[in-house]
Image (cartoon, rainbow over all chains, first blue to last red; front, top):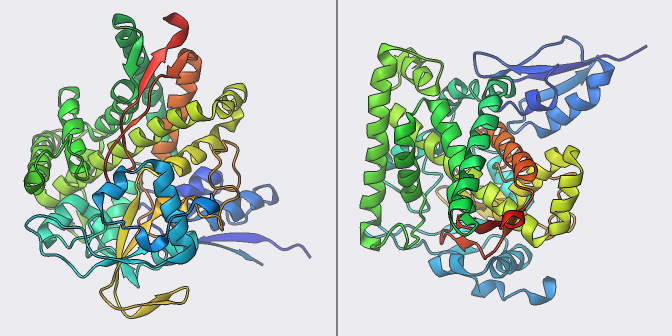
Length: 68
Length: 424
């Protein structure tokens, strides 16, 4: 059984600082609505470390990761 | 440094003369506060014509700054984030714009501009940062060659780069750029005698500076309403929040915020970076020899410089921070400079280490909705500035002490004499 990793952005909290996009541009992008969007349904293993760093560093703590 | 700490009780952060002390003395004072009086209470500084408020608590430890900043519902910005003294509501909004606003309105307005500052959007700006920086260095070299080989780094490099970048992003005409610089200097002078000669006139001078910037904005907004471009001013005039266009005053204060914040901070970081690398030449040599150090080097410069010294929050209810109780209405000043030297958050915080990692500094503010909008832009500007200085001015050397701004709010450097040594 292999666990998959998902990223989630809380749009109520995100103000689009773009820190996640700077850390993991293949995974996050601030859209026209000024909040960040997750570009991939599943975080690929090679981006897992960057995704964790982005979640840790998110200034508004809008970004969470979940397994399953 | 521990052995040299002053008595924490002797430190008065409200005394403007404290901010004129040499940096080492100020650092030692904050180290003493972190150790012995982490929630020290101070009387408010006197401001002519303003009623003196109840005083404020200084928040000086990294963990406490984080706790306050990351709980905006408990510690709000709407009572004022950039002034210790409560300003009339109109003034607060005019000079603070969204920096002195709370969610949900803050978030709505913030998101409008966020999209102009994302990493991908900034890629387009970077080319122009490179070009502007090249022009600026050519002009600086000319200034040096026409004189005795020396020039003022602030005037010729660290001030013009962010100024011209932010003016270009906002769509401000080149002819207006010098006025923008001059007026933002006034607004963030912090009481320094060079800018505010008569203390009783300080408020008037700052109001006039705001009006001058608003005047530039008004003309520009008019032009953009007729013919929109892809600049920020066009975005602001056509934007709607909750179905309503931003008012003239909202656009004007937004414009002032972006001008002021976009100018004074990056300028300060670049100036401190050059000075720090003069003091620690082995760090300069290290970066010049290894360009891949850029990412950590830029963060360390921002930590070291801490261009914005503090922001204020106000408790919205009775609450506590890491065991210390606060009452509704209490004012809390988060000292980022102190958090950035906290021995508990950084290994050897008084060492300038361009390879520092991790580096959880609060130079762009601590976690929370007000985290610096321009962080990614500032990082690019600082990176480009140093890359080009190393390439095109490897002979640049500092030949005197920095002339520091006397301000509790901005850790500014007014002048830093440099020389192009190899050519003299």
